Image (tube, rainbow, N blue to C red; front, side, top):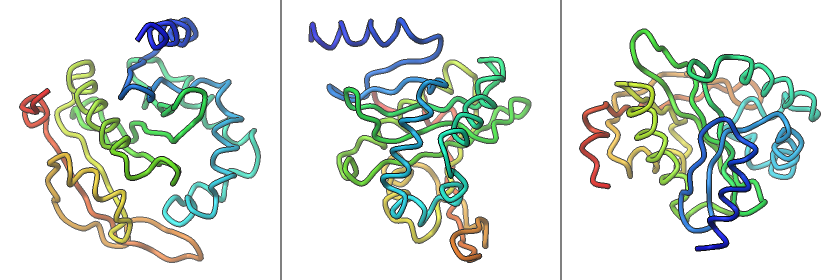
Length: 200
């Protein structure tokens, strides 16, 4: 516990944004520009797996592409930005999770995520999604959180199902994948009052 506390303080000193332990060895923190190279390398090393369901992967041809993405995200004021978080195990990047298409007027947002195969099947992403749902409800006053998953992506669908999200329907041909093929998307949602009723 003493080691964890020291590591926490060391990491927090470099941040202006959110930091949280997910479990003993895993934590999330807001991505910063200095993370661009390790994010890019992790995506590159797992490209064949990730590109199946993540259309953006093939557009990340060099570190500069990731740097440009992070610069764009970080240029938005903190309280208004779609925050991107790195998921870390010690010094190793495990994946990313973050908010997309946030609508502050209507108090709604969407969560997107990916995790490299090495860390899947351990409940890590479910804990991360749960944490961000509670955080965005309490800190940002969001009323509706949405997750969209390709119907064929079983690991991704398992997360909102496990957390009690409601499957609202299917967005037909909602995303363009490899080789110009469209995929249907399952649309899940959870509301503020449902998140607040979670047992801690």
